[in-house]
Image (spheres, rainbow over the protein chains, first blue to last red):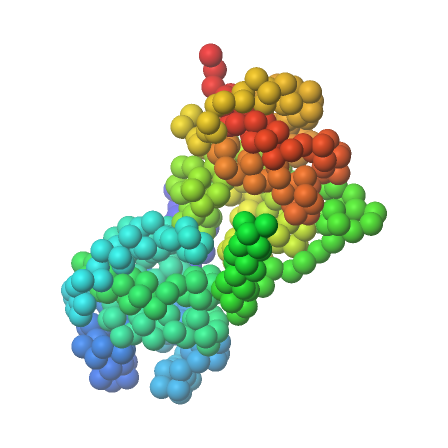
Length: 198
Length: 234
């Protein structure tokens, strides 16, 4: 088999290959631009900033591009990524995806059972699907569905609020419907459960 | 009378709750259905034809099915207590017609509509999902009725239903008739009743005509009988 054939097969097998980033090329950019809020290795210690370590590369790249285009609105992130090229964004996505996620912090352990039930089973009484169907049983996510395991609770709560209020509208828009149907307690509980996942 | 008023109050509360819950959501559009003069069942639908003509793959459908399995579960069993139907083994034509009817607003389902919008799943993905659902084995342990009126249920079924839905409830892929065997009793009762009362707006007028004369007890008897039909090889 020729190299060309192999390349062709690789290209056909992975439509994302063309935009797959190079993690090594993003090290200095990540250090200069992102580390102050997201931590050197993407394990943000600041509760309302998301952890990026181990996050799905496809998801990271989509969010970065959406910040750049304004489809995802954030007054800090928008200006920060506006000067970056698509290649920079792909490299950053690859860099953070390759970092090792640190364990999350649970603030209200008493809510974990409620959160676990919702995460694994959903709530048929209010037509909420399970979280695991897209985010996986272990919270690792898959492709465009983000990793939620070990995520910062404050960040998660803020996202649920934005989704429910119709203020985060990028992505599949599935989360808007789900967030609207969740009670305050369920939102808190499932965020705690996500943070508790290794 | 007291009961009637109570149920009226509950119904209004329910309507309010539903309204509040879905007020901000991705809203389901509303298209003409059986309540509209000149309604014709299963009129040609561009998306449906595209999906049916697409070379669907059950394997690809397994991935696209993620969006469904949060409620209908990985094995397609659904949730009988919540009246989520079991869908395993359903004919692709039936699954796709119902999906397109929900997308277009010919079948009202505000709970499900936000998850099947064209911004979430493409027509091709829906075709793959339908192929995946067809490949799942229908459950033997689906929810059944109380079994008290099966003779009556069988008589009604054989007289009114079997000619389209099949002697064993197998349905008909070519004609878009659902497989009713292995379906949950509660879901069958609701859908049969809703069809009778024209709440299921994409129902076949021929079926509605037949159901017009059905009492609630008839609906329950025939639903119980359908829930016990099995396509398993004997």
